[in-house]
Image 1 (spheres, rainbow, N blue to C red):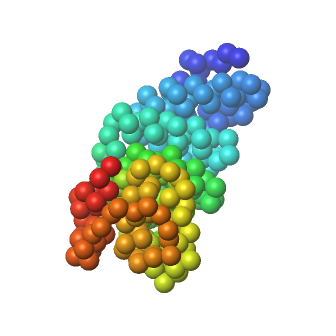
Image 2: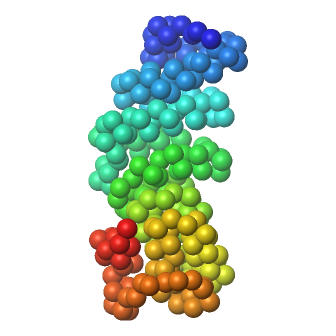
Image 3: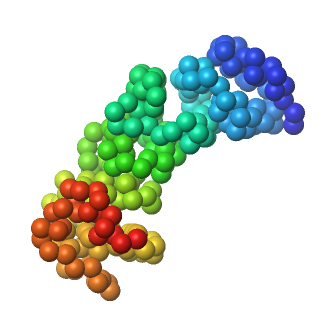
Length: 233
């Protein structure tokens, strides 16, 4: 189905008019318009235009538009550079003002979609933590399910840190360790080996070759470079 690309492009600067236009499309044309927006028009839009549309489209119909908005956001971040702790995107106030305000209106399902789309992009543990907090997850225990779904080294480091805050829940630690081992990739197994040593999970059986002294384990949990060196992958 063909949609009027030029018309949609013109309407980008008028969120209400764009939403009205999209609402009048047939299902097939609506899907085509969404693909056009997510793949191209929202990616190329000026920053203020994009964030105005992000807020308006999400609040108008989160189910219809969140996937499209996140797809464009991932592409924009890949092109323009990732958020950083000191400012979250060039002109970071836009991120803080709009993204955080949208996060406040997110359901658990919305939040999961946003985090699983964005977390893999972040290369700094500090930025991973900041994003989790911005998405309304204030407790370390709430971070764990999301971090387990993202196979990145920054997320693995933050996972180990988050688990330290729930170390009283030994059953959770053992389940998490088994989950990582069953995933089967080298990094996940290495993190499971670190967990086993860090938390003394002797009941977790497996072929583990990792050996670290107590002072080395303490550094692994506190220093990202030491963590990466311990992973050896």
